[in-house]
Image 1 (spheres, rainbow, N blue to C red):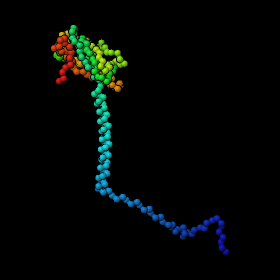
Image 2 (spheres, one colour; image 1 turned 45 degrees about the horizontal axis):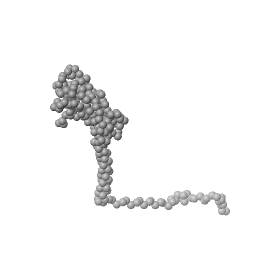
Image 3 (cartoon, rainbow, N blue to C red; image 1 turned 120 degrees about the vertical axis):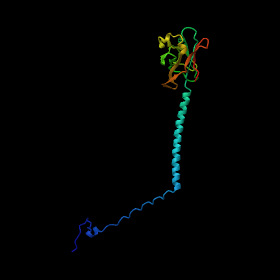
Image 4 (cartoon, helix red, strand yellow; image 1 turned 90 degrees about the vertical axis):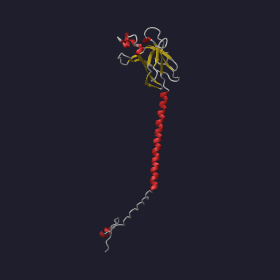
Length: 218
């Protein structure tokens, strides 16, 4: 009698059928390698990379040069105080009134501070010494300083600075060299301060009446 199979069950494969391997997968074909570059192509790639590097370096130098140029122009246009001495008509030459002027036509000398400096006194052994100016008279303005074209006056307490016994020497003023140190705000950048030293002055007795004049360069 034939053996009846239960419905719903798949016929089992024999061990031999299970042992038979299935169809093998064919390996994927590899993409062909690109042909090697010729010497001309390699040189062309190197030339392009070099040109790109040179262009980037040129642009960087152009930006740096532009910034440096603008900074140089701004620094060249900065205001610089101009100093002069009134005539010495009576008393000590150290008691003379000095004049400060802003000759810059565009920028003001804002928050101006002036100091008087004794550079040296010949045959005295005195070291350079600085003291703040007194009796400073500047035109009224938005800041303590000088607007373009404005001028002011001040005095230097040199006699109290020099002291005894050098102060008793009547010829000390003729052997002294002085200058003025200015501190003021950098235009357009108020948080930065500029320090400027004037030319050296000496008592010019060839002028009548005598007065302090700037020392010739050299």
